[in-house]
Length: 549
Image (cartoon, rainbow, N blue to C red; front, side, top):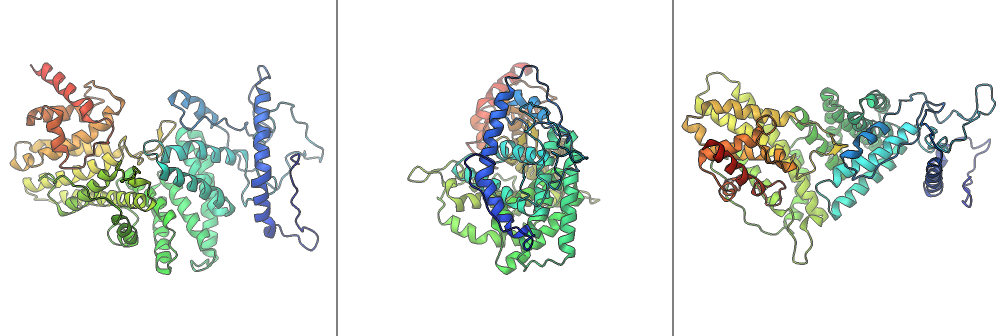
């Protein structure tokens, strides 16, 4: 027992054998008393272990390694290899809270090594059985990994403000609190396990095990007929949400689509009953954006009707507090009604970024405006995916006129360039953990490059020239990512978009940054974007002209 800590007494006798009525009280007591003491003890043990020369890190009798040493969230790439190795613990599917690992098979106590690291990662972080799943060392490591790496990558890397700090704290609280439901708990661990597996593939099997456990629990809940109207409805929807996230991270399109479709139907039922969980909905629409980016597939959620209806009250409230900012007119090459509508919407979002009110406070620090900003961005993403897919399907038709093909190509690469800009170095749509993307959407730049190459074959037609500025903007969006590291070397293999940007700019007579910027403002552009062309465009143009001369 921790010295100086109070005891929690519960009525547990022959007439009161069930543990469930006491679970919440025990859980709360553990959180307030045991865990702070446990962290202090582990810290002391770690410090003591540093004085043991030549001590090798080994597996204990449960097959677990010591608790992994989490580097700070802002750790750079120099610590990536060490952090990746620290995650490489073997999966233990047979660990259970019900077994006493301190007693051998013949009933005698086990003899443990005197190393201070023995007690760390022993395999049970839940000695009172407050959770419905075994909190093994593996589970504890994954939760620590989530707290110290995944959350900072999602919320703080490129877009940190007062609001995102609050949202990050809420996400952690949500994950910790929902470990009390069996299916949701397995789903949460599966989600974190899939991220860890992208950094250390040996963990993939373990993550899939947790996915299977969560899926089995969800199946039982549905088989038992748990209606959404019942008190247990949150158990079903949270369970489905975590599986939707985990299968997206696992790049399992069929399973993710199935869970996402089921989840969308549950949200619609909540909306009809007036009990919609907006916080969870925002998280899952974000996950849907990631799924569509990974596979270039249609979104699971209805971005045309249902989501706009759901978010409309929030948008109306936010608009009353937003300043009026003049927008540049769209370029004539943005000639479809859908692109015009959503490009104007996105222009408004980009303009509000970084703007302060009369008191010097950022507008995005206001929660309702932040919700407006994010929800609009998610719907914009979904509309661009749908626009790309519709025009891709139309391009497959036979007997199309050349000018129609040029139009359909332009619609596709403008939509993909808009998505790629969102996933660039300025926004949090492409979080990385230990320099590995959580959601690998490399299909977007590959497809964008292919479309620009295929449409280049018609460069002598007037219909092609109509979209020259759109091509210039698309090349610039790709070059932003390539130039994010500050490089000014023209390498045709590594800097395809930059090379073609310079070539087309020279062909159009766009030789200065001022001239290029005036073209970009007709599409999606913001002065706050990092790796701005003002830092490298004119240098590259000068180098190109010297080579040509």
